[in-house]
Amino acid sequence: MTIRDHLERTFLAREEVDLTDGGIVKPLLYLSIPLIITNVLQTAYNVADTFWLGRYGTVEVAAISFAFPIIFLLISFAIGFSVAGSVLVAQYIGADRESDAEYAASQTVAFSILSSLILGGLGYFVVEDVLMLFDAEPAVVAAATSYMQIYAVGLVFVFGFLMFTALMRGYGDTVTPMLVMFVSVVINIVLDPLLIFGVGPFPELGIAGAAYATIFARGVTLAIGLWLMFRGYRGVRIRLEEMIPNPSYGVKLIRIGLPASFEGASRALSISLLLFVVALFATPVVAAYGIGTRILSVIVLPAMALSQGVETMTGQNVGAGKPDRAAKANHITAAVIFVSLTVVGLLSTLFAEPLVALFTNDPDVVDAGATFLYYVAPTFGLFGAMYTYIGGFRGAGMTGTAAGFVLLAFMVVQIPVAWVASSAFGPPGIWASFAIAHLVGALGTALWFRRGTWRANDITGGGGGSGADSDSPLDAGAPSDD
Image 1: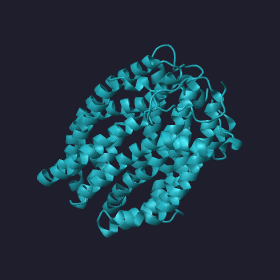
Image 2: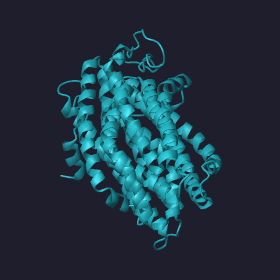
Image 3: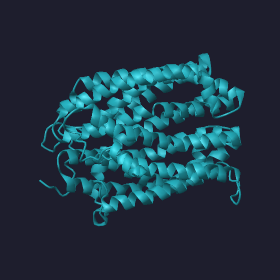
Image 4: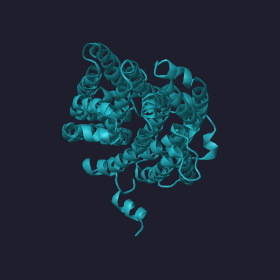
């Protein structure tokens, strides 16, 4: 039996695991476990870059700290399209409208490619000016600019691969993206040290080498993803004739996806604005901030994966007219992830210094990074519960509500707290702002979800409701099976 056969037996295909009927836990696990692995692999890109660049120089690690939020700001637009495509596909599948799902997938890929080309071209020319706004050391700005310009040129590959994983997830297949992501990470991990340090016939490119490795790996796996989707492998199928941009459908995708883009942009913008505060301190603090946020992103991966799983389960069950089942999936997942990540967070505080030391041997950076974990790690569970309910809001089509809570937690609460607290307590004040934001976000999303207002949304195109969240994602102008 091949590895692929074994994985397919372990993680069953959509036809074998019905997300809209039967128990809740088993299908959610079948959906989410590959997502967790995929997100771990996704983060391996950033971890590999940080690991090798940390051994190349402190300036390069600091540069990555500045580049990361800008990258996330760029791909927040891809997040919007991917959420729109995933929710459309999930709800069409739940409503047994296969041709609509295929049309939604084709249009999502087409518009994501167009938007990535435009954003990548714009980003290439403005990234240096944006980075200079942070008032960082000139060497850090130069290194970050080099990385970001290469990334901007290859943005189409990043967007395209995000679309592939989101559309497959909406259909209920999370195994195939996991396998393709594994290929991508292997390519990146192999190329990173070769291009950064200049091993054998490869030139020493430093931070630019890390960017080239990432973009090349994304390009290869996007080609694989497109081939799979054109074949219609395991459900999701795109058709060339249906990829001709339909302006009315583009408006629909933007209306659904724009709040999700705003959600991602708000999170990225909050990290960027925090950098203005962090940059007031020495370079080791900036490097510790970058390492600390990377560790945070790794440890909360199960929460992000389960959020995506809940999004798909909510979407398919809402499409099938089963909101009670969708609500149960949200509550069970939020409780489990809160307990699990709280335990992991408390354990992380016991090993804070060794964790940070994996990424740097600078004692000042290790000390600052460990302090970050002392403040933030105990609230990992709150972050997880918050994003579980955000996934539920997205799956129900309430992308505006999801974006609103991210804005509340990370812009309205965290930024002012960080600014005021850092003036009084130094870097620990910044770290404390993370914990406060997680608490506000978890309580807000849980209480709002329990109000049940998402149940009243018209998500089948039958009329009723008002505003962006109440319009049906199913009423998108695509050819219908009905």
